[in-house]
Length: 373
View 1 (cartoon, rainbow, N blue to C red):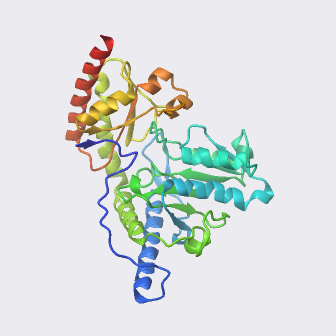
View 2 (cartoon, helix red, strand yellow):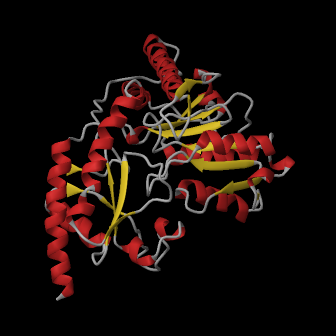
View 3 (cartoon, rainbow, N blue to C red):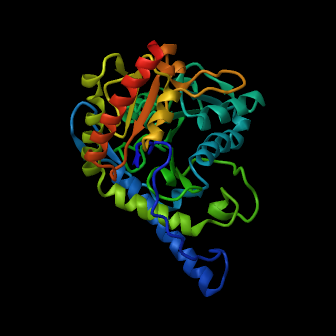
């Protein structure tokens, strides 16, 4: 099996360990509370390892301040809940002052959907310009093409023109993979199963001073921002994964860059292929390619039969065709429909990449010959 769908979910070495309710006053509960506290410290440390000032045109990295604090970490059920808490939690906490929300239309649905939800209920309005918005939500790395947003430059420009703006970053594809300056950032979402942790766990870094209204109410866990007994076992495993990856960001970056180069070399082996990006600065973890003449869905299934697992670049609703992320980003329909996304992890090998290339070449040639007949 060659698994190149790591942007969807990574393989996990998650081995459940027994933990108890961290709110319980007995010894087992206290031990669980300590494990939760340590995990919070570990996640804050991982974010601090990423917290670098990056000159996107050079390999020039310098420390920035201040470091994230463990008391600013809120654990959730995953990236989607974290994005919803950031957007809707901020909206509900600030309705008296009037809230305006801004995000690119090609952001992940867990950003665009809660924004639309808030606007449909007149909780918030849309602003055309970032310098007028209350909250701007931006992905660290585009989940479809791997384009890296220059967060440092974007956030600095926004704050320069709109000092009161709150900036939220969806870090699902960037957490523990890319450096990012948090200097002007107010919230950063992350997900466990994108970094070889378990599914069903994630979190949100909320800078002290940012007001959020909880979306779940009950026992007051997570500093009254997310009620419900914490999934301590999953949180601990996510923290362990974050610790391991955040200590090897550059090393892992170099490794997956080699994998991406191998797959990108398909352009030398097959005609009518294009790599889909909006910028030259892209994550080595994601490669989106279109194979003209072959629909992405057909190619994904054919590769799956050969043990190579990737995902489609264009997703359609079976009842009513919805625009794919690539189309929303401005790519032509032919490119969107023939797109396939390869996404890598540090645990993939160059041998897997080379073998996958051979299989892709064989299948694309065969499918094109059948289709042309």
